[in-house]
Length: 332
Image 1: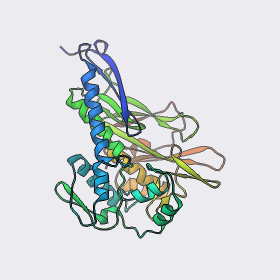
Image 2: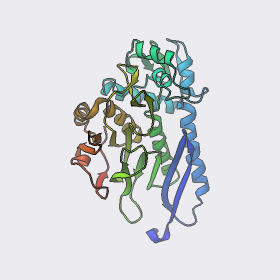
Image 3: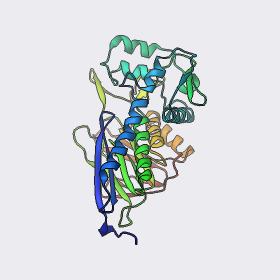
Image 4: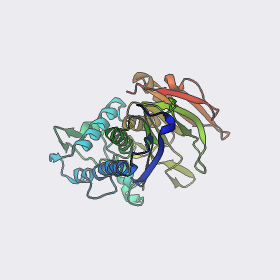
């Protein structure tokens, strides 16, 4: 006999990962012990971090970064999967999303080291090609075909969310909401047959308030913004999002871009790409690849305006009580 919603116990699990924390919300029968589920979820994100972290000198990513140009390096399956997806979205976005900006990320102080003027000058003067032209993948191995420092901060967190969802499913939990920081993935429906709801955050660096609410069913969402990680350069505040053409942070961008897609890794990477391209170029690209995206822009009077692309974000959503339906998003 199937369980009714009143028979199920709500579980909200969490743990540390990638300098922040992962979360998992799901419902299970009373006799189900959540401890093994939590252990499996923690192991899943630790595997991602061990392979893809630029903060761990012994990660598989940093081992690849340390390899000589032209040297084939064995890479584990999950890292290879993320590298391949990163290159695909990099090529599709014509370099707006690029996984080869690790030297610039570190130089400007958004990695494990403080910003350094000499490294900044080197990053800005480097002759750059997009990573999809300099990294070759072949059957569980990779090699660099030119100067290249890889950084997966724009996609690894989303992939970690995907691994949380896959791990829940492997544990027999078919419906749930998982996330790392602000990247989320919803599977199925809540026990009362309603979608999972999450907030699209207002781009306010001083407080966390909702701009709008998304209702998610079998879809993922990720946001890239300028209001959580930045540096102050004189009177100017620069966000952590890098511009491939300059080897430096963007000089102007939307306050945030939110993307709904099939997988959270895709949503994560595309949100960065659209952030780099801005509202005009970003909406053009979103239409080309049938992405659902919400752009939030700061106006001169300090207010925030919004414009959407795709069926989920077809109109401005100024009311935080609004609900945006996201059922089985098509993604890319």
